[in-house]
Length: 323
Image (cartoon, rainbow, N blue to C red; front, side, top):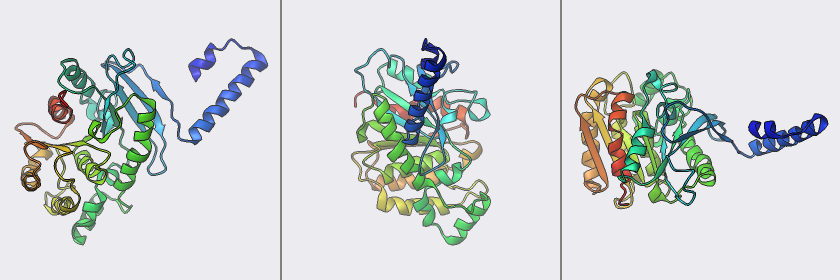
């Protein structure tokens, strides 16, 4: 809009009248959920990164959303793309916004695999987290299956008396964000071309998204999945509750892919026993070996650098070029 107005060779009253018209038009569009995506001069990004500033929602608080478009997106106007939705979006593409200044380098890794013909053409939608990250990423239905004492301890630890917002967060993605992305970008909209991924608590909500919306998401990557939910105690309470939930809600094997992994250092050192229990359950549901992959990475920690180094593995599993 700003660039448009500066290019208008109008003067005096005509300029003000024209400006007022477009301001009113933009205000009306904003009221109905339109958010302009501005291509910003992000440094050292492979491809193009567009940002939706304060994308509004009736379900959760507004937030930034980054859309990564691979090299060649603008040139090839007939190509359509699979979509990978990722949580903690500020950590994916730029050290300027990433936690601790360490990004996933998701753009470089994805572009390289596409150039080599190893994965499907795709775009990445990075959904920034907010101050309510814990309540938005903690799966509500598994949480509801925890023993009351364990639930209270977890809420007290996180200083949260508010309701769990994960169901609202998923509605935001499915009912508001995905329709916007499908309308404004050249996407392949079907389940088999729509994926979701995240690390730590983002792993928990990614699996939950696939189970709650199996007709929307064809695959989930759960990286360093934080099965205990707590940061103070490594107990099986939440993991066991999640397994109870999965017994009823995990889609039948055959149309979905699920990726798990964990390291062995820092917080990831907690995860092996939990992941082994989840893997055993997934085997009973016939997900292994075709529809589920679970990996252990010795020496890797719970941080963006470790996730950066292995991001290619879930991409190759979920979006192989042959599919």
